[in-house]
Image (cartoon, rainbow, N blue to C red; front, side, top):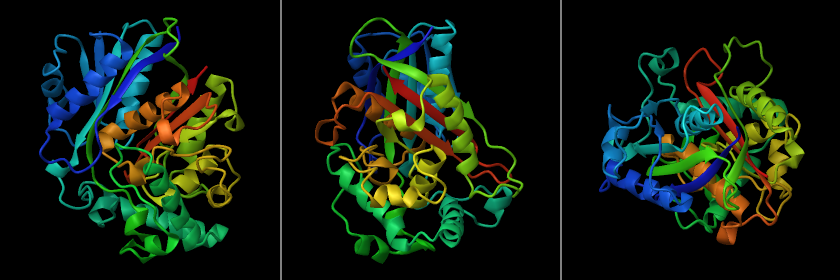
Length: 373
């Protein structure tokens, strides 16, 4: 049995300390249920990273979702997409009928600045927060492939410009390469405007078996993997292998190749992340990811637009909600409902979310989902 997305919903993205988790969840869930044309679900898979115990149950009782199984998932930045993967798997196996996938994060309740390193982790004890990990990847990538600071910054230019057409985006605007490189250095070579900001938001999707409704979006594939041991035998930078392997399995499951995808939402928490990810997804050869952006290939109007929503850099990165926000964007794109950021003729869309940071493995988890007819 193949799963389909019946409806999606999201809140605004940004620092919203006046709104708690229940209020954000209500907005996203009500929109998703209305979009799906249903008023109940049989189970819930909820993704959150920093939410307190019972976060999902406290939020869902306010929309009348009680008594059904509610499973909360933490899988770093891929928590929301992991919830979606489990929802699709539950539907495909016949375990449940209609399933709600929910992602929620209220980061401003926990952080006034960057996410603190995990002290129980070997890298965390050395103070290696995510910006430093991505910065080391960027520095190595530049040394091996000759990518310039300007090429890194251009990814941020693209995604902030895409975000101007997304009324729910946290940070959007017409920025120049010079402005991005001139912003405060966070972890060399990554400046402030090459790093995503903390954010509060919720996003949701209703998934069920195909029912013959034209607005439903079929799920062609969804694959979840955890990273292999990071033993330094790979010739690639951190995060490449897990995305490559997850994507390969998703392409095989969907019966397509990278060139068949029309629009993508990928994990661009830092500019180097999008470059490495597009290569791992097969859009460019190793070392060619920066050229995809420079040539216009991944811009709106290009051959394969990447992050038309503005991505994590512009839309925002509320960790547990991010994957389902990416999914919502692809659903809107495939329906032709994306307004000023619409990718013309989009038929197949791809979502990639990679969560990482645990020392010793190449990423905590990665989900690649392929949607469309």
